[in-house]
Amino acid sequence: MATPSQRAIDEIEVPEGFRAELINGEIILSPSSKSLHWLIQFSLFQQFIPLGWMVVAEQTIIHPKHSDEPRPDFLVLSDDEIDPEAHIPGDKGVLVVEVLSTNRGVDLVDKVGVYAAFGIPNYLIIDPFNGECILYQEPHGREYFSRKTIPFGEPVELPEPLSLAVDTSGFRTYRQRNRG
Image (cartoon, rainbow, N blue to C red; front, side, top):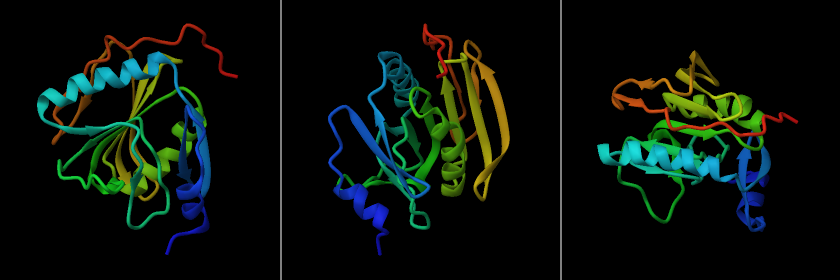
């Protein structure tokens, strides 16, 4: 049975240029991101698709044991069989990526717990404010046991089954480093 929040997110009329996510029982509305955000996503598509990985962007993912419904910026799936009429099953994710723009606290804190609970083995945060990537691995409960920070320009080494070094040399930082 759907919770009141789940029913509300299905019925909410999301304004043009925004997206809605259900995180920790709250509906989060985020405005569209800047072009830099999309350019980083595009770079990820270019790196994963030629290797045969099924990837999606900004699609709601669900898990049968959790009520959260995040919409990650980028997700690599372990299975290329997805139901085009349903949300993406989060337990099929092998890598989830968030590119920081708005709602940074949600990506840096709340989603760490959500993606760990979903059992996604690799959570990569790409931070164009600080010019670095944060890779979380080894999920256990609502946290990850491993956390590594990699500066832009250095590869992000991903383990099997991905066996890929994400090239960050083309990632750029936001010109304005305002944190407020």
